[in-house]
Figure (cartoon, rainbow, N blue to C red):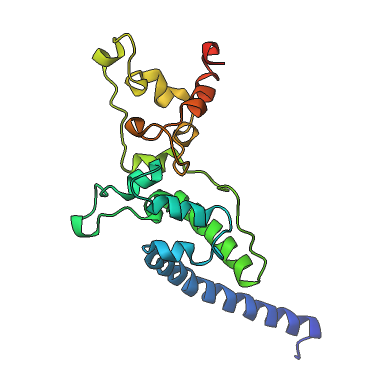
Length: 209
């Protein structure tokens, strides 16, 4: 029995769907691990971010590379990564912005894929702020604890993270106080910006309003 035109179209559609599924299954790992390799180079991360003078990434990279250190991000760039051999221990963009765990990595890959698509079709707009700020897990890769201390907590002016309420129970993300790419701040306090931090403190402490 001959197939009806509808049956022929359905068969072709199924073949195309099967082809697309196989191609996706092959190309997805290549894209995932291929971009993992490319992202080890900070210059790759900047490659799609247009000409000098366009906001965000060009300015951020300039700040990141500035010496003497001018920001928290620059402080990281000048330090050695704690989990890699000294010969390759310089911090890279992807060390903080790569995402942690499968969900974090997938989130980063999805955003990168979206940006790459719009860049390829000629409609990429340089962002003016981070679409997805860092999660605490991104910071905890290297900062697993906050040095809580009963003795320090008993001091008249205890260090902020010496108080347990300022840690897991705070309900505030690390990056809400620690501005990574904002130049300035207090050099002896990890480039924290006092005015910005006071605004965060005022959310719980009326005396800082």
